[in-house]
Image (cartoon, rainbow, N blue to C red; front, top):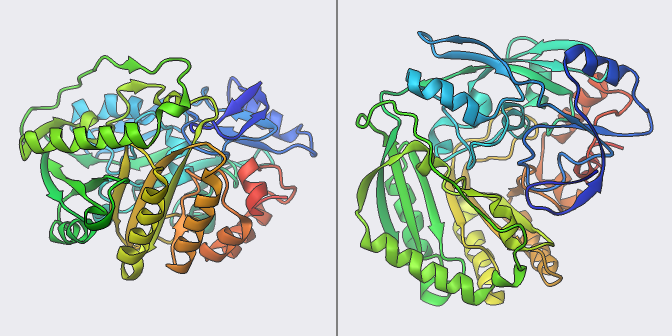
Length: 437
């Protein structure tokens, strides 16, 4: 069957295997075709080719809650469950996942394999910070436990390791207590890039912070933006609301995403934010997952798909590097309706985890022939600034850029050689980047 990542670029003709239980999975691994790579796939929300291989192991059978200590806030669950399923159980009980990415439809295993981050990375770090332990099925079919104290090197390689050390079966997660399912949000406006960086520093102790940027603004307005900060509310109670979702059309002409449509959207969005209340209260799903209410929103970029380009650069070079990148993007009229800037905290000890102390910028680009030269120029900007690209969003990074920007690569490869000596696990991405043969 043909399979894509969330960006719908690239694609692969794959054999999908969906084991009914763990013994069936182990049997499949032991009887594998040694000439074929395989990779586990959870909810399919990685954007590029990190979950694409000739053989795909679906993890939908890993869908059980194992235990939930409602006093201590510790949950043990299978890795195939989505964050939505976890939150539906834990939030009404007064517990929230401490780190949430931009969608609740990612699987627990996918969140660990990508070591996802959220709007609070500057204070709380990545998803892996709250993973107490996990069980992992190796290429041999053996199941092992790992944590920071038990098989710590394997733990560090698996968190952010893009599924290349084995198949994550289950995880034990430490949750955060909350008394409300709502977020107190504050909105501030920045006329340019200097102002938004100053606002981030001013609000660096805010629990959550994220900025929307007008990627088409130029000149004195370059980087004009809206900063949303927030903290967990004490109002509203522990409700569990569901919201009716609208659906993107099955086919959408990609040419509708252009300079004119983005410019109109940006002006209307800025006007709407300025006309609204500066401080308000939002349901947590609306605050953390603004795009989830549009079902299959990835279709809006047309049949060729899109690339989400996300990079992080250190504090010392962030202002200049992001400014140069935005000039390149706005000059060509490219970019996206949702351009996101976030402040990041210190990097962790995991070998391939993305964040570092600095700032991260994420944009969606519709696939078109003129896009790739622009992305090559952005790569050079990121490299010169001492930054790197996010593996969970990547679909075309070069091996050279990857090896020069991920210093933990050698340590990761050492662990991989120990747990997967026959090089069973691999994806289109891992082969492109030299992570697998």
